[in-house]
Length: 359
Image 1: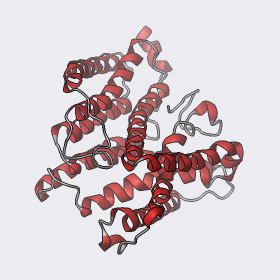
Image 2 (image 1 turned 120 degrees about the horizontal axis):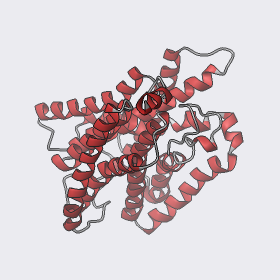
Image 3 (image 1 turned 180 degrees about the horizontal axis):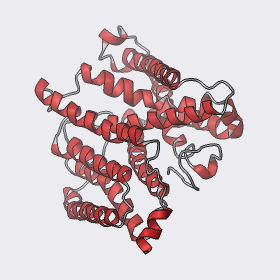
Image 4 (image 1 turned 45 degrees about the vertical axis):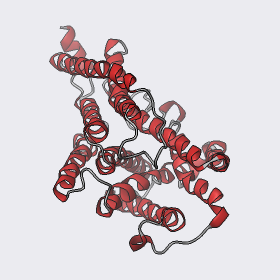
């Protein structure tokens, strides 16, 4: 009787967006990542650098582009700007000043700080999805929550600890030496904890499913995160494998989230746009901004893809200011992401029922 009562309390829809969209965003992006590994093996680049034919879709069209989706969540929404003008103005300005100060102290220091900010952002985003799914089904806050939290964090943190304990590897987050090494022993100590926690999660998933409380979306997020981070960082040791397993499962679901938010905003207007028009508007805009940013990066700093961006330019001493300026969109995205999806601070944001936070 208790099980039947519990089942009657569960939402009929256990997905964040819809079954089709959730499966495409989370499972679909992970499948694309794995297929990209197979393509890389066939093309002979699995153990090497990311070739341009993979860099364009993975980095330019997903990783860099998803950063600019923040524009639609915040800076293209005049009502949102008026609601918290100080936050939305101060973050990019302070980010620029902070970046210039760091870069003035040393290029490596700047990239190291940015790398660890990115790591924190990537880890927290995966936890955020799990928290959303838990809230969707109003799951209890006891031992089940502890297992969920430990599992999703270890699914990302253990590969990172392994990476730090086995430097140098054949890839970095941004550039060479942006991570500091740690004793290999730490990874060895954490390994059994990692595997035990994953096993506990699997056992719990079977248990709650038998109780009629299956949460398939959450399970997909946990499994795909564990697989992609482990395979991309530990199993293989290359820039290509890390890139395709890391940025796709991070950027694609985020773009879907922003699209869903845009559809909510459009639905409140007298003349709502079609879904197709919303997709075109979102993707065309973020791709345009991504290309413009990378064009400046490449011509002024990296000078690696003249075929796509044109010849190099010498910015001289302006690099101290240009590099932090170009990093402002990333910094802004990292910081604001901790604010803009929390329901208690965003009364107009409706993704799932109940008093729920993404973070």
